[in-house]
Picture 1: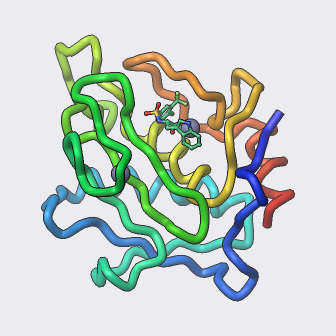
Picture 2: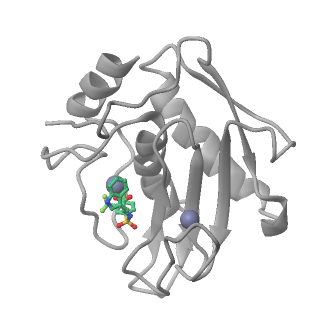
Length: 168
Ligand code: TQI
Ligand code: ZN
Ligand code: ZN
């Protein structure tokens, strides 16, 4: 079953059209940005929320970046595997990914690495946190707190949909 953060934080009704931006220091490729477009669409499909990419990183509601180790928010990344990414509950809007992971960007990525992680799977999970969902006890759910390397799990389960619809 789904859960929320303590105090049930969520984006207010006055902020249902959310903007997001990528940290300009990362110089991400269009492929990586497309992964996030798709990941956001999976949540907007079931909610009144919309997500629009903007260039102004400092003004965006949701800020996405890839960082290594200590990156200034007190939650350090740890190199390959371990912590892959983290996101803060509303209204902070930070979604950080560990730059040291081998990220699978799409189906045609041919990686020899057995520790490669599917970026869209992790992005869909972290966006759930950005919107206010905690972890779920349902194994099929996107918000279940375990994923195997190489595994692709991008479809919201009924449990995720019920959780997000209770919030929005
Ligand atoms: N990062 C953890 C996560 O996103 C960070 C975390 C731990 C956390 N406890 C939390 C975030 C409570 C919010 C609330 O769950 S992770 C998975 C999963 C991670 C884990 O790197 O371990 C995914 C990132 F669920 F598959 F294990 C993405 Cl998909
Ligand atoms: Zn961080
Ligand atoms: Zn999580």
